[in-house]
Length: 337
Ligand code: NAD
Ligand code: UD1
View (cartoon, rainbow, N blue to C red):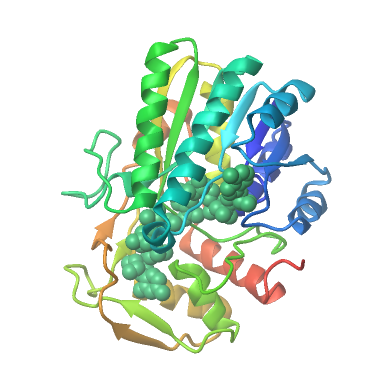
């Protein structure tokens, strides 16, 4: 099956391409390299033995999308392309709405013209806002507090309305919890530009000596040790979730919504300790003020994906921290240019 993977050069997309190739699928990557490097293609080949076709393009370029889908006989699309930094989205809302919302509308319009009726969209647990209780099921109310979160919700709403009007389409919304880790070969991983916003890339960079200490945002949350609790999921488990979704429901018309998480919550200090064990390095940290917009705790009820798709995250916290460290220690400055 030939699948267009927008944003396939990025962190989650590149890992998904490898799992797709291993499952016998053919990814065709469509990415404008805004937040990734072309070296990723070589790494995908090193790991999987196969180099995917790559089109350097922007998802707002409808003509190029149509031409690409026709040229490669695309049957389904996985749509990872988008901007993802919450703080930046507050400073640059127009850019976020244009890239994430407009980009998706152009993509779906191009799919319609090319006759492709199956799409998996990268959504986020951010659409649950500050949940009243945990674990979170797919039927919880949705809300957002920043332009990034709004953009994910808007796309979910647009796709839901579009599917209602076009009942023969298969639209899958996958709500990711906190993806971490890297490929177990240490050849692919997360390579944030500038100062990392997310916890695990920051911790890895402290371990490798690129940063002096971790600031722990908030130690007075109503959690077991006062620090924020999240559902960290190994990026390869997440990637497998896409392969299974494509296989099981990629051709089944309807709107399908799934949480992709483990169902376990770990605190910031749990993650720091686990990373210290995996790396053999001490992670100096300071307890500082809460980060505005953060919530105390968030973890998934992943049972719907298990029941319908037979998918369950398999990898442990030890796997996540070991693989993150392997990637970071082998590639201290990320991917080469
Ligand atoms: P990433 O930045 O590593 O990958 C995104 C890729 O999309 C990059 O290679 C970038 O160059 C490309 N891209 C961006 N805008 C584009 C455009 N207009 N046209 C073509 N390509 C474009 O991010 P990621 O962590 O792999 O995330 C992938 C998706 O998953 C995003 O939509 C993100 O919002 C969503 N998501 C990520 C997380 C997370 O923690 N990483 C959590 C929930 C949801
Ligand atoms: C963040 C985004 C969310 C996005 C998700 C995945 C915010 C407010 N939320 O979620 O919208 O979907 O990333 O990309 O940015 N932490 C520290 N020190 C750090 C970094 C983080 O203590 O330097 C803490 C946070 O307070 C939180 C936990 O670590 O408790 C995880 O943070 P992070 O990795 O940024 O993910 P989220 O906040 O869950």
